[in-house]
Length: 137
Image 1 (cartoon, rainbow, N blue to C red):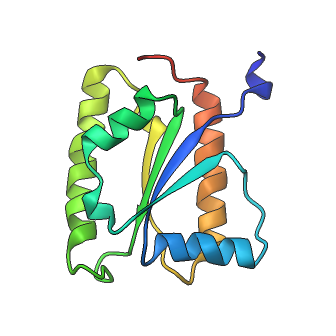
Image 2: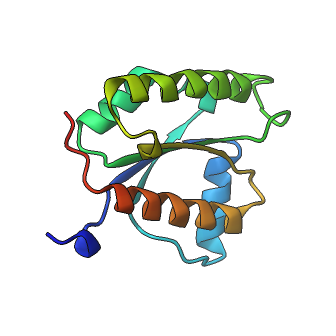
């Protein structure tokens, strides 16, 4: 398999209230983005834990996208702030484990940002494609 033919598998953990709705808007609006992502709908980005992310990598994901509400817009008041803090610590853990931090990405996408969602998915897909297949586990 050449580097150009590699198509990464990306798991996207999307908050139900904002990011999932943004993904839905991208689809309804017919914005083009790579089909490499598999969406996992979660109640809040604050519910995502490091073991969930490691499990996704262990089960064959080449990259991960976690997306939640913008700060101050969380339906659960501060869930996205917990997620942001947890994600910063997780990035350090990835580096310690020898895993490229670019494999796991975190972003904010609101329900009205369908085009932004499509852009984020395209950027994440290209970044993971450049890293190549994940075979650390």
